[in-house]
Length: 550
Image 1: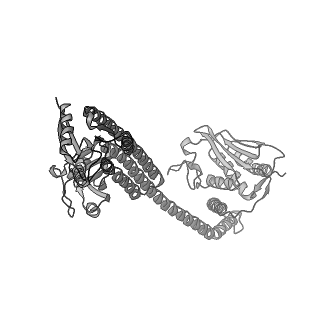
Image 2 (image 1 turned 180 degrees about the horizontal axis):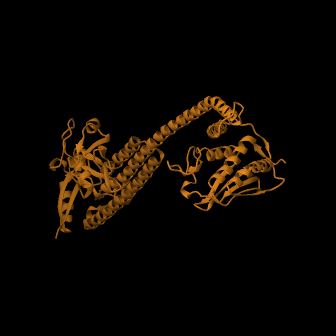
Image 3 (image 1 turned 60 degrees about the vertical axis):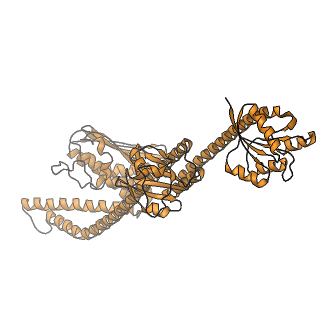
């Protein structure tokens, strides 16, 4: 079976051309050829069709083999070039080989021509394969570099239009496209709109919305499958965008997928008579689409978190304003109540003592109730005042002997404990270091803890322990009372919070005592914790830093 061969013959002699063609046909080639003998004719022939080999005479009146070789290589052509001459000597043969000729054959030895052509065609095939492999390798390097750059872009900025524009630009440049677009599914879940469009008709593309299933982009968004359309003009799914030229082109669309949901589409187009897209192009665009989907997801998550942070900041600011208004209200009300409450308590005590005249037993009992309730109100106002002073850092600090303070308070407290039928136990170490603080407010801390222990204990004991642990004084106030559920441990220190806070609660109080304890202790650089079990009692433990003095 004959082997086809297209030969461009650079030869001025028809007779020599017949000798060459005859030799090739004799060696089994099915030959098609064209003879040229000027640079212009050779240029026209090279542009008109593809050739397998160029065979040139070395010396011609108006042209030469070396000139033909130079012209061929200027076209960056890898066609085999063989000199056939009857006059070339060894020196000239070396010259033409150095100039880039693949071989030379003497006209008297044309039997060498066909084997030389076969060899050079095979080597040309190998060169083309190596060049394709090198181009593929270079392309892979560019693709990897592009993916690295995009990964860096994603980590460097969360501005979505900036990142997507870079991705679309990389895709257009690397895949040699004319247009590059990124479409996103809008919040209605049914509409697509291009947020990035690169090309001559970018504004028209961005201005046109499309439904899922509409056009190639809408079809890919609906199917979730990447697709190449290399004959757009004859595809029934084609959609014309107003204001854009209606020209045939190749198109490639890839879905953007996040958490198994299509959130958009990347599209590339080649206009006019450009080469079609290949599978390798699609694989790379799929990789870019994954990066784009990550960028979109990250940007949306960041926007959500930013919005939450803004809302939280507004909420915190409102809370701060409310706290400030609450403190001002408490301060003003406390100030305004203190004077009339003092008068009420003073007159009640005078009535009860008989300074304003004798009272019968029922009147004395009523006055005692008034005095007792007035004292409760005064204690509440005093607690408010302490809390506000601590929050506003208005306390004067001095060295305080905490052990002496506790002993004095326990002496006053003894009668109340015995009256309640409880046992008071105390372990207060001697020669303890002093603490730096406000004696009056530390006394109120102890008073509140002891009062709570007595109030919530119906039988058993109240115990107090004070000792030094490393650089702290540790105070523990324990009882055998009702105890506190574990899920209430944090809330019991909130203002006005009471564990037994229902309308039928058994224990009195305003919910200020433990809030005061926490505020004062933390102001003094200490900490308070509670350990408790329901029906088994509670222990409040306070750590206060020593000042080293005694």
